[in-house]
Image 1 (tube, helix red, strand yellow):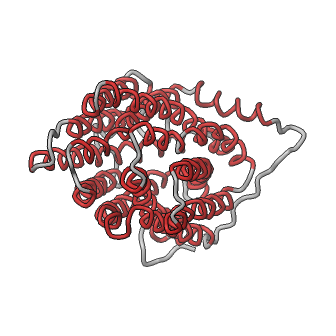
Image 2 (cartoon, rainbow, N blue to C red):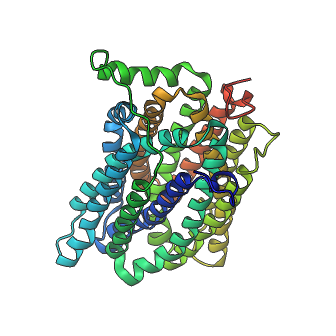
Image 3 (cartoon, rainbow, N blue to C red):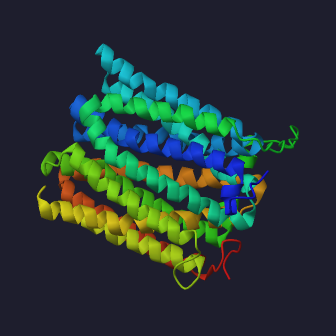
Length: 418
């Protein structure tokens, strides 16, 4: 039942519960992402190849289970899947600080934790993105995604502001414990959603796993808009992983930035991301068209990544360039993500939502694994800074791919190319 005193989706208590759960999870996850990397680099003295393997451990298992996740998300109710995935990730992450306290933490355990969280994150993401269209009306998707992204940006500000200092005060494994706790809180809020989820009508005689999986792939491949978004996101995922594989190694190992300073710099991106979500919540930005907004945002986030590769020391100029990167990249990243996800949710039939998102994840994981391997190899062969420029080039290729696709003709989220 909606409140008479609030407007929009804030008057929908079940949406608010979903919002509270995902915001809490985002807060912990962002701390956990940095904490796991710093656990490897500072607590276990990991080398560049080991950091690359850690990144791969968070990608490859998810890549392998994506087809399974999409089919099961479309076969089963989505809320229980989300709750199970949250609690499973909490349990896996909790083993890191426990092992660190006992003196038994190893890189192999980090690899295992990365693998478990990778698998469960795929199930959660496919279920969550497919669940939102059942909780709100199709015309409310852009507003819903904008609100979720906006508060995620607030969580980003808080988490990045605190993460560097938490790593220093609690040590990196201790900061991972906060991530584990956040997933428990997230599961609680999702559990409290009151709206009963429609029972999935299943015909065991007509169910065939591989046929259902192929149908999801066919939906993406046969629709020009979905296909264009998929290709662009795959290239973006590859470029992003090339960048993230060497980024901290370059900033901390070569330039000498401290964890606390980097945490404050990254927090700027949370503030600017909030601006991108605020704009999306009020409609499309470029020419009033979803397609133009996605293309422009893709180009601008690639341009912002250029500033990440420019610093040559940890002085004021280096800090300024990293801050500029947050000002340019993050708001357009958020703007792109909101319109991209809303468009996909709006044009995809309800019965294949899970498989559509899982196929996007499958493609993204595959190219992200390639990016992780490429980042590790290039970082060792040509250097960290040069590898960052390679990543920027891949991001620009992503912008070109979406520009050349039918996405360019889309006016509103509820339509395909027009």
